[in-house]
View 1 (tube, rainbow over the protein chains, first blue to last red):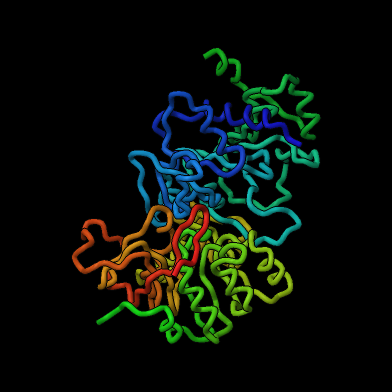
View 2: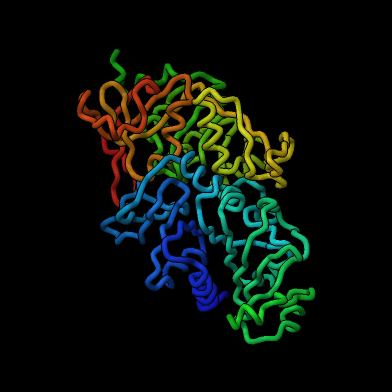
Length: 220
Length: 228
């Protein structure tokens, strides 16, 4: 069983990546926890079923079952919010008007191509907005534990699950490390677990390296 | 022309083999009263275009359980266990589209556009068999527009002409579907007089709407409950 702590470590680290005033779409699971760690930063949450300016879940007596998020849970809306139809909502997404999409994943390859929609060995009958978000958001941050329940690494040399699109995601924030995807492949930009890069390489099954100018980044 | 009809009168709008556009995301914005009426009509081999096939025991799930659906076009069927089983047995055809592609295809269908090129799904399983084209150095696939013989939608308010307003995220696919059906039936919570709706806020102009029926459902907590 995954400790809730790990999920929160990931969510907290991702919150640091978000900037005040950004338009953000949060996928289901760990991404939704990011809102707990924003501090004073105000972001505008978009949900693909047609709302920009989504607020927290309502109390039970204030549930309006028309008003839901993409995970079909009741939500609220904040001052300055807007409602729009699904075509307009995906124009926002596909057209590059979402600053950041934070998405869960099954696998990411070393070039930053992700697989987050088709569950292996099950019929492929659901995709929802996953592919549109991967394709269209200005920045995609992947939020996931580094290892699946069966112990396999979600960071892989080659996808064995169905790709969500050819777009290279920017960042993968895991419970072990933060990975950045560059023209020369995946680089570690930050360790979260207290282990060496050699130990981490052994765990994922291939050689990892730090981003070359990491020392400069850290000292900046 | 009087567009307001009783729900029992809508059976005549449907025939076997029809492609029917059905509004809603989950159950939000789903025309539940019209679907209940469809259950009573003796038709079969329907193609349903909707994001998903309702919820367990509700909405389109009931129509599916009657065996009237031959094919479903949408973005998310995984939650419908029976639909997944029927698909595996070859009893149900499924055409899976990314949600944004589904929405845009319906928008095009209603706007007189034959199709469009999108980057979504390029290089994935869902682009198989689709024409690919490079535009300004980027890869796109072609998606055909979607239209319906009938569109059944849900709105919050209609005036007697058929101008429609929606409520929060119950809007979803409904405004596009209103444009893309040969016959468009809108189920609404409230019908008001012409002139009562502010023209600045009307989302669907009455030109798209053929029939209006009063919804039998109301919201109770987390459920839509039949109340009339």
